[in-house]
Each structure stands twice: as C-alpha cells, then as structure tokens.
Amino acid sequence: MDGITIVFAVIAAILVFVIAAVAIGREAHRLDAVAPRVVYQLDEAVDFVCDRLPESSQARLTPEEVEQLLLLHMRWLHAKGLQPDRVIDRKQDIGEQVVITEDTLIAYLLGEAEREGIELLDDVDAVAVADAHLRYFEAIGAVGPSAGLDDVL
Image 1 (spheres, one colour):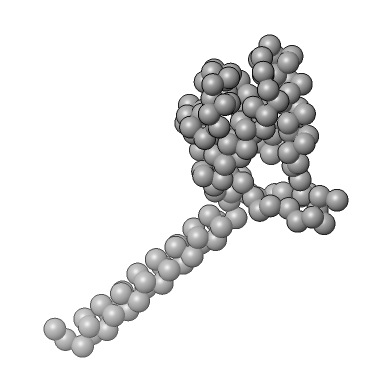
Image 2 (tube, helix red, strand yellow):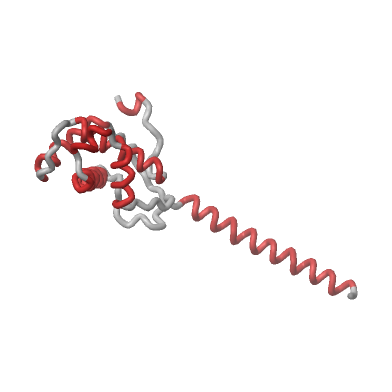
C-alpha cells in the first residue's frame, strides 16, 4: 500500500467515527428530553395488587373488585393530570408540582366504590388496594419522587 491510500483510510475512519458520535449524541439528547415509556398493564397490575393485599383483604375482595378499584384509581389520576393522553415521545413538560395525598385518594375511592356498587366491607381494604397499587407503579417505574413536608403543607 502506498502512503496516499493509508491517509485516505485514516481520514475515512475518522469521518465515520465523527458521524457516528454526532448521531449517537443527538439521539441521546432527544431521548433525555422524552418521558420514559412506562407500560401499565391492567391484568398485571391486578395480579400484583392481589398478591400484596393482606390476607383479610384478600378474603373480602374478588379480583374483579380489585380491578374496578384500580380503574377508579387510574380515573382519579387522570383527573389530577397524572395520566395524560398521547404520551408517546412527549417531552417532559411538567409545569407545576402535583402532590397526591393518601387521604384524598382513599376518600375518592370510598365514594366512587359506593357509587359503582363495589361493596367494601371494611374501609381498610381501599387503603390496602391503593398502597399495593402505588407499589406497582414504583415497580414499573411510573412514580416520581416523594414530596417533602414543605410541599404538602
């Protein structure tokens, strides 16, 4: 090989590296600005929650009632703006903090369960379902950081 061929091969290798580095850097920057894709699967959530309920709640609630409570919880999250429509490749544009307290969630679940005809024999069942559902969100990576006391007050 002569010297000119070696120089062109080195220049070509450098150009390929630069093009690849720019493409990878651009894609990494784009992905950093996009909300991660978290897949919520209702059947999986029902199984997860049912497995983590205390035995007393498992004895009182059927999987269908748990599913209805989870759907009510999801409806409540949507009303709070935490389950927006069209989230695929959406930039993270959270403009204001949304703080969720367990008291408001439980009150909502109890009221809606009564309205929907879900018979909760003990109010603690709604608490257990909500707690296990929040643990499911943590397991799939769908929750943000916990608020400090300054944010709640």
